[in-house]
Image 1: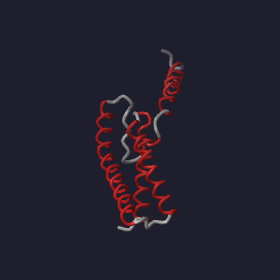
Image 2 (image 1 turned 180 degrees about the vertical axis):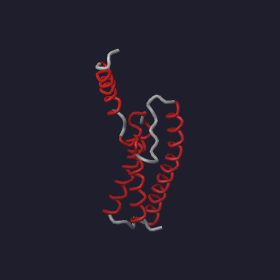
Image 3 (image 1 turned 30 degrees about the vertical axis):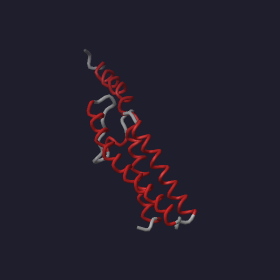
Image 4 (image 1 turned 90 degrees about the vertical axis):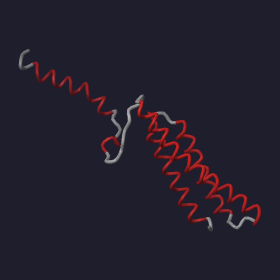
Length: 133
């Protein structure tokens, strides 16, 4: 191989790898972030473990909302319409994001997980602010 062909070959290899590099998620370089390739056997195990924890969180919120509704029936609704609407909005968002998390595949997992965590945190903040314990 001639020496003049070497830079062309190296440049071709670099150009050929650019689409693969561009397809890498930005979070892949963030510290503490684990990116699992689509189709990986590890993805299913990781998703199952995360879903079990998220399910426990979701069930806890579902039970709290149920108890609050039961209490409102027994004692009357002591929340303003605005507060109730805000709590309902946070609950509906958690429910939506929970469903999306359960249905997510490897390609959309990071977005679904992030959306779930955001909605769950918003629910926690809304509950703490609006519900008297």
